[in-house]
Image 1 (spheres, rainbow, N blue to C red):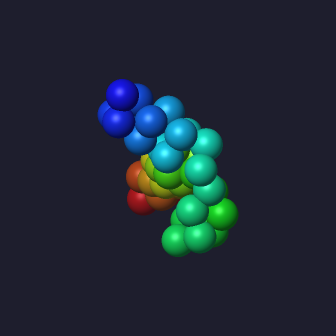
Image 2: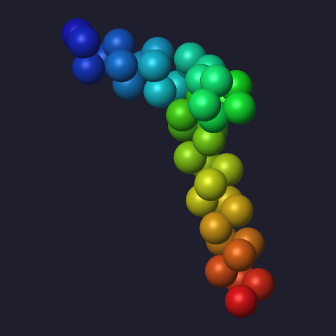
Length: 42
């Protein structure tokens, strides 16, 4: 039940000030999206 709460709410829905108001999942998605751009550039 605790794991479901953490994964379901904390990572997917709850915005974090550290991530600029993004959820952890959205922040990670943007990170990987940007890393692909950098990898293609070099």
